[in-house]
Structure formats: structure tokens, C-alpha cells
Image (tube, rainbow, N blue to C red; front, side):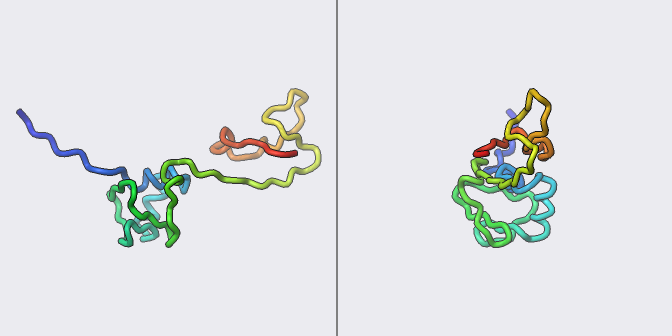
Length: 114
């Protein structure tokens, strides 16, 4: 019978930060090596794993529990120029407020108001 190494506890720090919408995992690895992230008051290092309940801070600002689980909401205020319409796709082919938004967030955008 062979012994296996125990599974590491927690989740990789950069994965938690990426899920919170702070950037890509690779970008967040740079933030960690730059010393911008602390966990329970200790400067994080690459390879650190975190568990729920730990105090994660980015540049001194606390990462909320909702953000850790990917439930953070963002509001983008856009002043619509004349001639654009507030719809995802216009059957008449007119320009929409969504035409020039980054594709990475396109699917998550919703229009409210006019």
C-alpha cells in the first residue's frame, strides 16, 4: 500500500483574488511578489493558500467575503452619445451602447435606464 501526500488545505491565493475580479492569476502573482497582498497581517508569498475567515488585504484594503466568492458587483456609468441605442443587438443595425465594451466583460453587462 503506497502512501499519498495529504492534500494541501485551502485554495491558492491568486485564484481567490482572480475570482474576486482583481485581475488574471498571472497578474496577481506579480502583486503577491511585489508585497501588495497580506494574509492575516503577514505579507503573502507565492504558493500561499488561504481558507475562509482569513483576513486578505490588497494594498491595505480588505477583500470582502462576497468578493472572495465572486459575488462582487460592479457598476459602470456610461454617458450614452446621441445615436446609440440601449440594447444588446439592434435589428436595424444602429450602434448600441455595448458595441465598444471589452469582450471580457461583455456577457456580464446589463443596461438599466435609458
